[in-house]
Image 1 (spheres, rainbow, N blue to C red):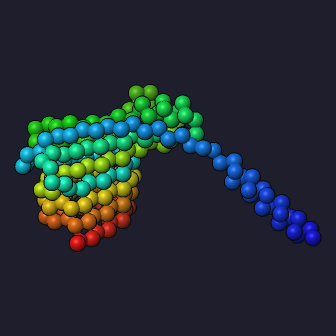
Image 2 (cartoon, rainbow, N blue to C red; image 1 turned 120 degrees about the horizontal axis):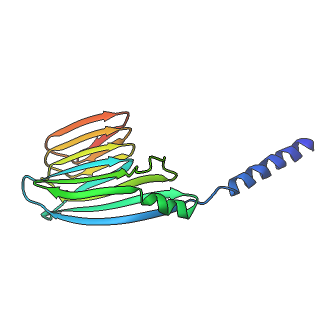
Length: 178
């Protein structure tokens, strides 16, 4: 009988601990940009703690959708920390530069979990250069040069043709050809 009582006490304690988990507030900022594409243009994306999704489409433009995300149990802190994430998405000559970074004016560590999600649609013949750390990279249906440099990032490639240059440190690489 005593064993049953101890067992019930342990199970009830575990249930109470499981119910006390704090809710996390997720604050997201969306950015949409479109750039006209001409042969010879290249996309350069540098992500830090980012999830990157690149796929081809049949339009002569480069579509960029960026989600900047901040997570914290306190909504006010999540909102404040989101303001520390900055991005760049601009064209310079024949290159489209896209990146995210954390502003460090006060040099204090971040209090929230910060990340960026990139969704890019590019013409199949558009060369792509990706640099990503501490995230994931997914690329589909490209037919030109693809260069990837990743650290602590899993890379998944599907139906990639053309030249591929890959340098990965501490990440898994998976590929499929249809």
